[in-house]
Image (cartoon, rainbow, N blue to C red):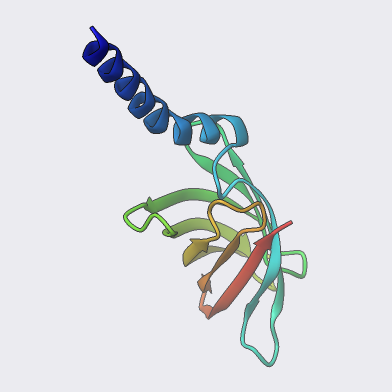
Length: 139
């Protein structure tokens, strides 16, 4: 009987450890969710960058503001969760260029500091024909 009690406690502990990440995600939302600020573009002339990302339980949506009245929208976000310390993220959307025309935005980045409130998201930002590095932190 003592062996059965020990086995049941061990199984309960394993179930709790498996459920904790899911409960934390449900409680606090997705690690990419939130307001982010930083910059993108050439190092000698960077552009201000603001992201406002939302998680509905299934997907990330949101707004992009890569500077100078060029607000846009997030259309699709894809994740590679294979590295538990830093996720690869591909974000696709559209934003206005300097002339006001909508152009595609593609972001290939890495999301780091997953367990911390202040997270880092950085990589390559392509907006229309412009390409540069970006770095944002969650506010």
